[in-house]
Image 1: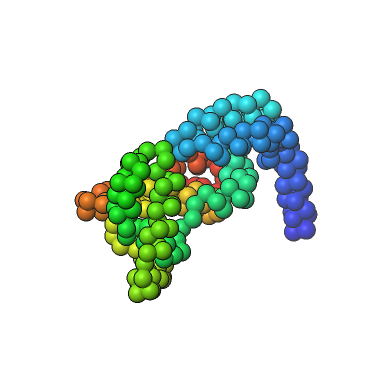
Image 2: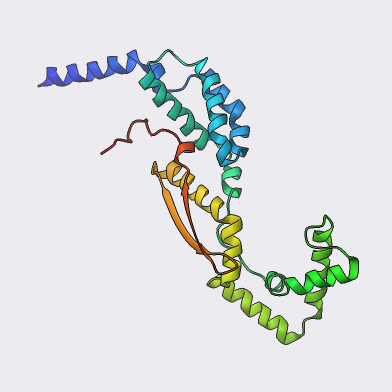
Length: 234
């Protein structure tokens, strides 16, 4: 029994010694990945696959010779490296779920049309014009200053309600349109990066007009082909 155990360990050791290059990335491969990391990180989801193809071609110049099956696994190693080596700040700042509402933000939402009309009447600037943002901030400040004590207290209560529960459906619809896809993409990426889990999202929501919309989100192509070890088809 002792000899058998010794023989098994020796065989395992020889196996590891024969294929060290196929088990980890070479220094020059990593250098190639590092050079492309900023571009890949900043790319839109629709652009990532094309950029990754270019990255893989460059990295392969420095990779050990492998067969097609091993190359698929190595490409997955490249993608895993790219996901794991995003700058921590970029991952942190990529998405922020939820919002802490303030009285000013509540007034910003509730009196939006009034503010826009004031700006157009006083300066001629219309929504979409380059100077709108500068005028809008100043006008919201003026509206806040005009609130009486009761209105200001109501704005504070509303801000607390929206922060602790949820904002009105109209605001939710705006967030769904502007940030929904980014939320789903971030969630899919993090589930893959942290759990090795693939996620496919089916969604339904109401837009600002009350119309029910349906959507599907599948970011798995950008995450890789799933040929790495541990992702069996069972």
